[in-house]
Image 1: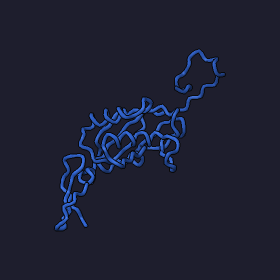
Image 2: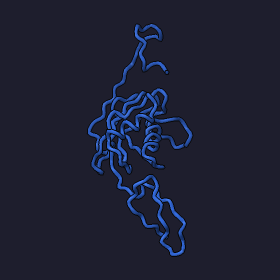
Image 3: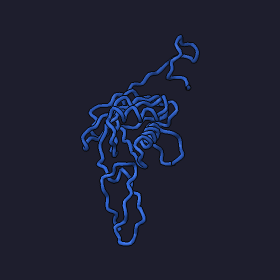
Image 4: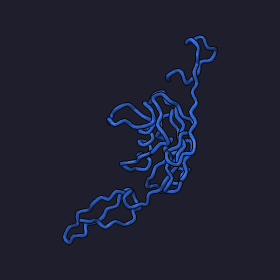
Length: 171
């Protein structure tokens, strides 16, 4: 049976089954009735507490940056499934200042509001620096024109350096 779908104005739309005699309401997910929009995200994070960018195959496994972002976006957008695609993967403990990612979601919020709302649900060591609507065809990994990796090696004995570098110590 197909349920007629109309544009949804509230979180859930109640549709009545078309079959005569049945007046049982059927819940239709909000995202099923709205057009998907593409968004480009620029993300900064301190990766000390995370097992890299990409979510792990085992659910309940170690936390990753992608999992934390998707969880925050699901809360804000009130959607069961949000997938955020990164421009590349990072290893465990790696930090990023401007990693590009994208997502396709049903969102009525303007980008300025959406970025603030997602950041409000993220831990302090992950931030969406910018978020903007982009063409549907945009893909953060396939459209990347360059990637810059910087490796810093501190070649001293622990405690002998005059500055306590924040990236070298856990919270």
